[in-house]
Each structure stands twice: as C-alpha cells, then as structure tokens.
Image (cartoon, rainbow, N blue to C red):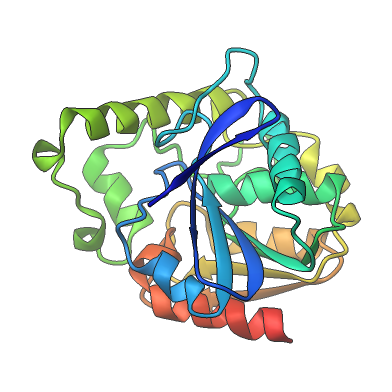
Length: 256
C-alpha cells in the first residue's frame, strides 16, 4: 500500500517496495500506474521509492506550486527525508525532466542517473519540433507514436471507478500546468546540463515516436558523463512495455 508523507508542507502519496540500494523513480505525465509489473521488476534489486507528483494520484497540488523547479526542490527535500545515499535516480519522460532539474542543482545524494526519453530541453531551432505535441494529436496517432504496440497502452476508462477517473483528469491538468508554456521544456536547462557529473544512462525505446533519436543524441552530447542505449520493442514508456529489460539495464548500469 502507498504511504502518505509530508515534504516541505506538501502531502505526497509514495509507493515503496524492495530493499537494497535506494532508487528514486519519477513517473511520466501519464502517472505512476503502480498496477503494472515494472515497480516489482525494479524492486528485485533496489529499494524503490516512487512518489506521485503533486496533482497526480493521491498527492496534493498546493496553489503556490506551478513550475518544474518547484518539483525539483521538493524531491531534493524528499531524498533528504528518506536519507538517500549513493541512490539511483530514474525519470521517464516528464519525470526525466524533473530528474535533470534536480541534478543540475544538487547531485550529492545520487551515484547514478537514468533518464528515459526525458522531456525538458530544446536543442534545435525554435521552429523544429523535438517533442511530439501529445495534446494536439489524435488519440490513435498518439498511441502509435508512444507505444511499440499500442494495445499494451490501451486502458478501458469505462471500467474505472469515478475516483480513479478524477485522479486521471487531475493528473492531465497538472501536466498542462507544469509543461504547457513553453511546451515540455525549460529554455535555460540546456545551458546547465554540464553541471550533471553523475554517470548518466540515457534510455529510450527503439520505437519511440514522441522523442526521436536525434533528440536523445543531443542529450548525450550535452551531458559530460552519459551513455545512450535503446530498448527493443518499446516506445516512449519502456518501463511499461519491457519492464524486465528496463530493470536489467538500470541494474547493470548502476552496478558499473
């Protein structure tokens, strides 16, 4: 069962499981989806701590919070509250953006970082689309872009209780709040990536149509200590499509 914790006056719902080296997982804009097997796959080798971002799941969204920098400072406080040492920080998509914002500020609690198809940066010209606009895409086209097999990401919303549907809607509103303007990036973040000396694994699904190979290569070139790897038969959410391969890549990298 998730636990409720208060960090910097913000009430968060946190999933925790497993034992060993701590691993802080920051979820994508679609939410934590703890019912999928990826958390258990990670927990085979790590003590996994996975908070619901403010506005997602059962976590509160204070009125004063509106930027990804707020989330970065919040989770640095969470890492201190959980007394993390030599932890692995893992973020996917929107969660990867948060992880990068944390690391440009303070890397002291993290011995390894994994950014899986992270949002957050603009490398090319103003008119070049680097992150697919999921809000304007037809749902079927988005599913084809985001998943190697769209059937794996299909969710029957009609079968969900109203309380869960309300949380899904709140999460979408929160994603728009944090990432709408400018769209899913911080124009200044690129200039500070040189501060992330932590060994970093950049992961992406080989079939990811939300961010492309060129975007991931730009991340790899901007970070001082990064390695770029892909996961076969996976799209933008490799932890959901290939949980065992995702967990194995992270375990091997963290060990090295």
